[in-house]
Amino acid sequence: MKEITWNEAIELGSPYPYTLITTVDRDGKPNIMGISWWTITSWEPKLIAVSIGHPRHTHECIEHCKEFVLCFPSEEQKEGAWICGTKSGKEMDKFKETGFKPVASKVVSPPIIEGSTIAYECKVVNKLETGDHTLYIGEVVAIHGSPEKEKHLFSVHYRKLVSLDFKGNANFEL
Image: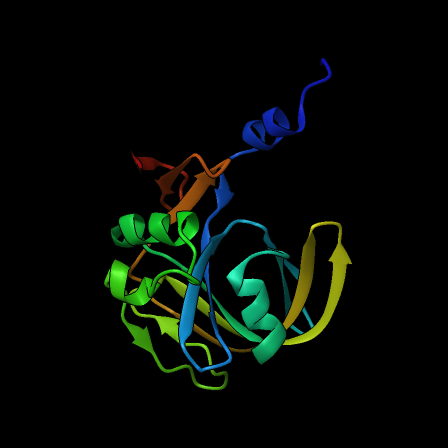
């Protein structure tokens, strides 16, 4: 082994599961952001953590509404998912630009993205400042899934997306 840079390590550790997080702003307008920095932190209670950069519009939205939905985009949603990870919701309506359809959540205000393979509705129960990001801990209050959609998106250091099925077979690169 040799010493490598932070960027080399992140890329070498790829791919990371790529998700879309939905929030709502102060006016109730829904927003979507692409992220790979999330993890399950507890089985009981069911907790998921997401790491959001301070200057991001999503950070502002979560600070306001204290809720989010973590959606796993399906392979068919790859182009829109890429837009959500590369453009700011402060300057555009990502639902409109991507063609994603918002579906009312069961418990929280932010919507579910129709066609997602999995969607976790979460209420923020804690947060931790971690340098230039905030780690939000969300308690999972409802879970939705599409078992027939077996292909998930993964990010290779936010440079490209790949699709893998449950067996690890790659299907495309974007």
